[in-house]
View 1 (cartoon, one colour):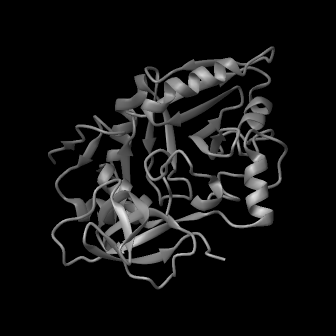
View 2 (spheres, one colour; view 1 turned 90 degrees about the vertical axis):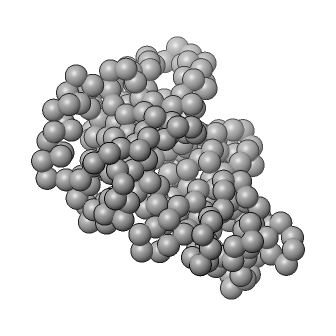
Length: 302
């Protein structure tokens, strides 16, 4: 297999595909594939107060996180807009987070500022640890993940390859889009809140104490609806072209949203995630760069 690499963007340097896209996507759907995510940043947090501290900073309930149990968590700004998307696991003494590499410096800066007098230590361990998408059917947060010391990476890859197919980011992204899982910072903008992305009771725990931005999340949940909603678009497959990231979503000549991730899925054909106005009729046929698109509802309209 000849690997094709991604030359720019969030996954720069990662493998895009190996030339057999449908085969890769099918193996991933069957739980018989793995992928190299070693381009993602890994941050380690140690110290006795680490889980209590992360519990207070994020949207997730982490005070009694079971070792080995992966969770997705968000960090919001004071107005409830999503700033960071984290995937984390604890091994009993250290919590490890992985995230998009370009977002790591801002996260590290924020975490260092928030340490105060607590017993926590924060460090970038991306050169010591790597993330792999492990074999097995994909779970609700994009795992199962394997956190691997880089000294053991070659041996782990050999073990995975013994009974599974290595796939590229095309397969992972097509599956993620089909499952309606937003990638923060790519499928969202600076105004995005968790309520409009289908993240409540997932990355956002609805029965925990105060965290930054919680007031907005709770107010929108209890008193109204978000102004926008994430939607899965099924694009007209008769077109040779597919939309680009950031393209406008059009209804009756008016812009009602924007496209995030786009991919060709081995079963569904061309699909995309988009954020559109909440009250857009569910049966409305939309248009993106002249391509007709039908909606699959991810976040309820009412």
